Each structure stands twice: as C-alpha cells, then as structure tokens.
Image 1: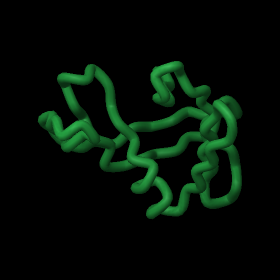
Image 2: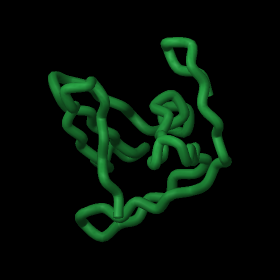
Image 3: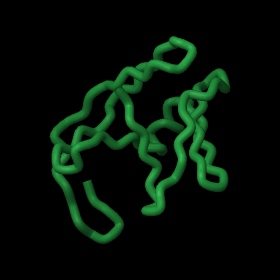
Length: 88
C-alpha cells in the first residue's frame, strides 16, 4: 500500500469484519485490509461506495449508510484528520 508521502507498508492480507449495530443488526464487510504494522484495519471508502454504501463527510463527522439508507456508523474526525472507530 502506498501513502500520499510516497512511503509504503506491507498488507498482510484481506479479511471480513462483522459490524454489530446498536439495534442488533449485523453487517459483514469483506476484503478489509489487515496491516500489522498499523495495529489496525483500513476500510477503503472507495471500496465501500463500489459495493453500494453511501459515504457522507460533513463538518467533523463521517457517516456511512448502507444500500437501504440506514446509518451504519458515525465517526468523529480526530485532530490528525483521520476518522477512527473502535470496533469490538
């Protein structure tokens, strides 16, 4: 994977993550990059829109809606301009 500053990082693979929504519904998101050096996973917003999700970024929030318009996640932007969410 290449970053904007020209640096690269090794992708160890892709896997699926299961999101459990506040209302108890589950959403499976496939082919999420696993990058051990980052100690986290990266969701590609481009990938999400390709499979039918809607990404909305307004002010300091990112909202992700499924194909039916239901809110899947709402994430506040951090000072480093990244949107980070803890999924358990």
